[in-house]
Amino acid sequence: MTTSFEQACHDTEIAAASTLKSATELARLARALQKAAKEGNVSAIKRTASRLDDALDNLRQEVANAVATWPFEDGGEAEYLKEHYAVELRSVATEKGLAIYERDGRLISYPSIVRIFPGDQAIGIDKKRVSTLRPSYLAEILANNQKKQPRFRSDMFLESLYKVYRQFVEPTGLLKEPVMPLARIYEIFTSLPGSSREYDKTEFARSLYFLESNGPTHTKSGARVSFPSSTGTRSARGTFPFVGPDGQVITYYGIQFSGGE
Image (cartoon, rainbow, N blue to C red; front, side, top):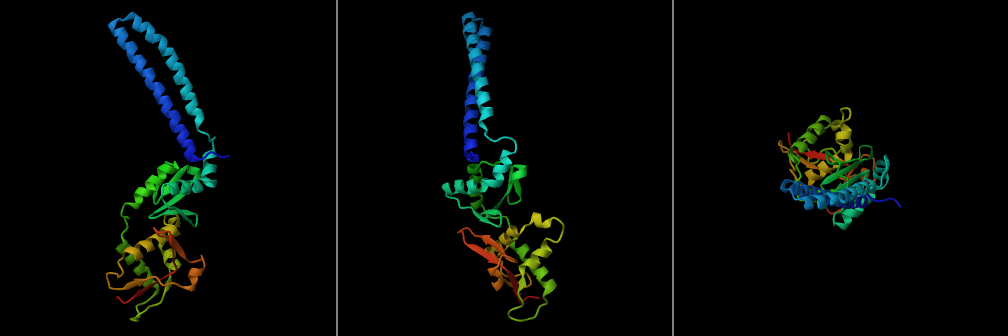
């Protein structure tokens, strides 16, 4: 049976605590020997010196135990991250009352998006990479993120959407203007080489969710934005799904602006 990351970290933490306790005892005896020598207390010198050997042997054993506690051999961590880590993280988070959902190879714990990088032995939380892989520790980070207000400029994002929309759709003056597939908007947003890796589809969907949930609903020129559904939402192609804080999947397909200049 494969040892979980949580168990491996727990066992290593306990082993390290035992090592620290032994090291503290060795340091205490060394200070006592120093004091006895300073005072010239011969009996204390001999008594303490004899105990130092035992303390050193005990420390060596604790160090050996601590080194041997970590169960993964070279390459084992990367394999575990690739094959098992997502399931364990979600399980540990659930025990802590935190919901993590999986969509398109991404883990979503609103408002955070988590990516696993097995080869780097790292986790990406939004745009930040961290090497703190213990599931319980990571769950605490994600839980704390839920208490913070997202740092997202919905107004600037809306203006960017409108600018791209107007490249393809001229103002008609009609109550409802044409619906433009968001896939075309995303294609423009990520047209530079490598930009789709920096701003993937899940992140784009999150931006849309932030905008729809928090506004604004109108551009500076007065155009009103909406995200109509379509038969295209029945297929994964050309859609941008995101999971809200209540676990509901919101799927975006098209965008529409009405009014404005």
